[in-house]
Image (cartoon, rainbow, N blue to C red):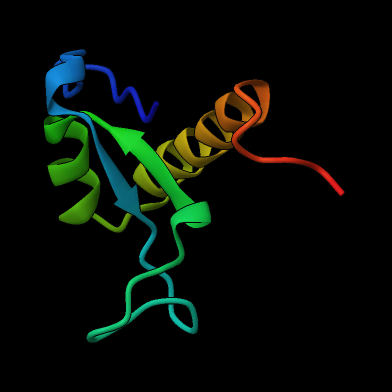
Length: 80
């Protein structure tokens, strides 16, 4: 769901949930909640884990939104 051009391997066999890293939400020994994660191929996950620039973080946030939308469509998440 992150889909970084030139990085994404588009291989569903490597999909993992990549968790956002953000001060106050995650840190040493503290992982962000799954709701703040994005499905990512192994290459996109490694890429966003090692970079902190705005473009890459925006791609990650788009992935979080696409993941949440898919979970809503699948009925896994429900709106109040």
